[in-house]
Image 1 (cartoon, helix red, strand yellow):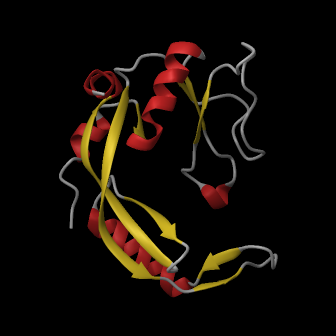
Image 2: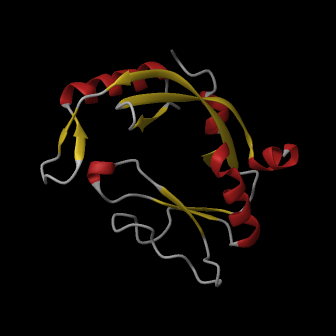
Length: 156
């Protein structure tokens, strides 16, 4: 099932889910904007973190994780630059897990990884996933609608 909202998502410089929209608006209005940090860990390529630019004392925020880039890769100060995504579930399936090589983490089995990659490919470029730990399932999501943070705030 391909996502039919890939173009609107790409028109924004950064996106967030409805659950994080108020926090992002607060960061833009009161904390100097949103800092986006890239990931240097090749095992998590493509991962990023979003933080306020400044902490509650007005100091610049330090990198949020050891594997984050030393400086933000982008900073956003306008609610028009941020898209708010409402996500919908398109697929859910059981995944096999195994112990990681260090013995402390859990990882998907090779078969589960292939199944997840295929499901994400079928769902489209803007698809994402999370795990339902209660049922040991991967949940594939796609944006149902996307609007600017400024528009979302005006309808709130």
